[in-house]
Length: 121
Image (cartoon, rainbow, N blue to C red; front, side, top):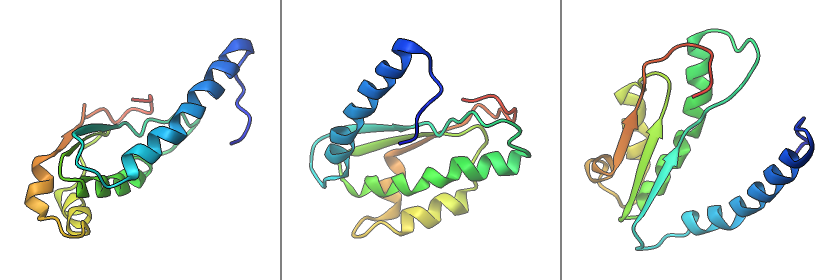
């Protein structure tokens, strides 16, 4: 990871938090029967990001996480600034091996505040 421009103790806190993410990711990527809720908030702070379409494209980069719904007891909450087209969601759900897309959709919760501003979520 690159160095962050964070003063003093904040950098240390960031580094400690980041270390916790590695085992957390390993636990959610394993196929298991444990109930779990995964929350995806692809929020970013980018100067002069451009149009809402560019912002939405950045947010949709994390849709690969929908593949975690292959775990039968996983629920996924995906938050974006604007609504994602249903056909895009259907595309990802159709990629789930051995999972009926409608079953995965029941465990997927899409939330959008409909805020096209450049402020981070």
